Length: 373
Image 1: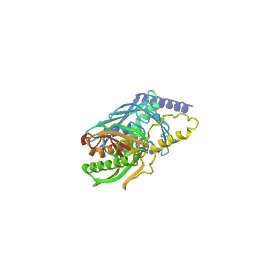
Image 2: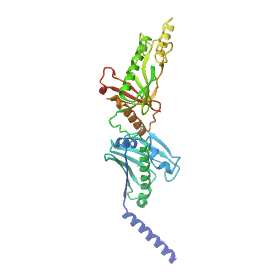
Image 3: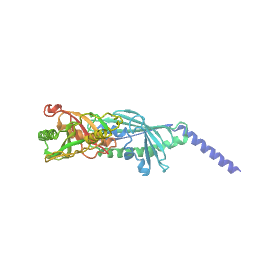
Image 4: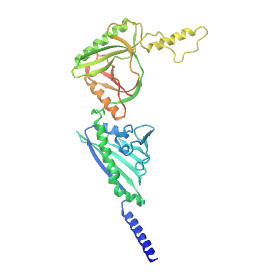
């Protein structure tokens, strides 16, 4: 009996020491790690302020390759929510929510996870050093009076901290795959474009702006002569569609959207035909359909073809300036696509919104497009 009493007393002493030590431990922990990249601040900010590529840099998938991610609402910006589910106890289920941003400077996430603690946040700050950019990741958690949580906080530098180091390493590796072009002065829009009937010439020129402009101007003049001789109408500005942007030669297509002339535009909702008029209405609709389809029966000289352009999702930006800057704008669009989890495909093209024969070369206006999957 005496030994039992001694054992109980010992347990009580241990429990008391556990409580007293827990009360002394901090009720709040903070971990911070940093990494350096040579990518511009805008690329870092855009990659982190959306969830499209979250699974590629955050280490959760390394702990559970079968983890499932889902995005609620918009995929980026304040209010965006990413939820994850895992059967691995170390990962569990939870969410990240973007609660605050400052463009090119800061992104704050509220975190829900099975780990001990509450008021969990991850804050990324971006510091532009000129040639390099510092990415700082700070994790913050409170434990309150949860003594087990306070004890768990003693090891947070190894648990959460090691994941942060791995995540930052993954992040810099992912950034290294993003084209290193700063698009912070470009207003990029994600939209859709319809397939368009065009007359097109495939051509090439030496890779200098004078040769390209000369060949472009010649091709446009030739296409417009074919348009006139076939009684067609232009429906949009000329396009330059890049095929191969080589070291010495530049291969491209020149296209002009066209349609068959329509004397009277169709009403938005054609009225029901009166008796005996059905055939006339069908003919009118057929003409409208033909205006946006490949044209047949044209008298086209050698080197000029008719066809349909790409129709679907694109990223696009307006650009004012010298045509020599267009390759740079295209690269900027590629970088934008990479940081936003979009995949470019097919061929980029530009619409010449200014008449190149009458506009100063430094004041030309373009819409630049790149199709995305």
